[in-house]
Length: 276
Image (cartoon, rainbow, N blue to C red):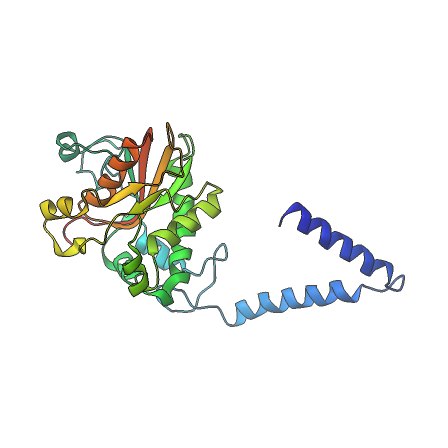
């Protein structure tokens, strides 16, 4: 609640108290308290359904994703800092995998919430539909807590930027999961959401139908940085729903760094491993 809103409510309560009979409870406060208690009791008697599995269960932090689905989606094993893939057994956390040491990544860091398989794969596919926007926002809130831990020792990003979707694709789908994830993350962490920094030049083919080499060609020069923003020396956090080869995120990072960004990290909800 803002300071102005809190002051308004406090003033309203004071006025109500002044018109109440001494020694009697204020009726307006009693009505508000009764409504709140009734809502809490209703949640206990009739728990809301989880947005993922659709089964009833208690909410945690007012996010409608049950604890079982949270655990099933989350990937907490050591991952490569540069590409976000699970590190081979025996390699210490916090380093690059052998593949990343050979590639020219424009990205400094990839932070996945989980792997694109099983429950989280189901979530990502659900998020492609406009009716599932509440699920996208809920997953963004969960992801925000994970990012807080992963970035605890780093400076916060200057801008949170979703991977852009061409207007024709947004129109046909009716939603943009990357935008909703970025919006939710920025709101929870109180970071600066800048949805118009990165713009789509053209509609690309679906990456899932292409080979790795074709994916890189497909997204080459697909993005541009808006001239309305000055991102010189800025730390940018790019947000997307799924990452497979990293071609899309790497092209976005290339464009951002060419425009002056000093550091580009990627937060991806689901990291594909090639076996999903």
